[in-house]
Length: 124
Image 1 (spheres, rainbow, N blue to C red):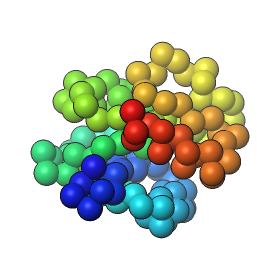
Image 2 (cartoon, rainbow, N blue to C red; image 1 turned 120 degrees about the vertical axis):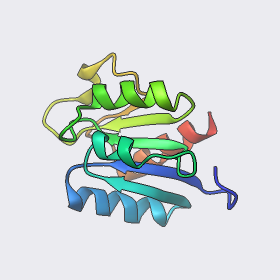
Image 3 (cartoon, helix red, strand yellow; image 1 turned 120 degrees about the horizontal axis):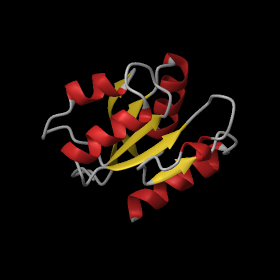
């Protein structure tokens, strides 16, 4: 967490509307959204020691680099970063195991459960 006590989140989603909605919701819930990008490739390019988030929130099917590729790269370069994945595509993201993520958020999750899952992940 940063010095304000807010957890830092990097958000990867290739859908600008979803990215903005999630960002606005989490920003109003004591999270600091430090990076917002379209795909894993863009995230990897922008990550530095100064802006490493506590959690990477990854839309699993973001374009350019799939969730598997992104997670593998993050685990290698930033092993302490927590990773939460979700997918808005038809079919449960749970079938995409083993993903390497710390938590998988099913597409049927309510916004309250979504936040609760992130809260629990950060407390781990």
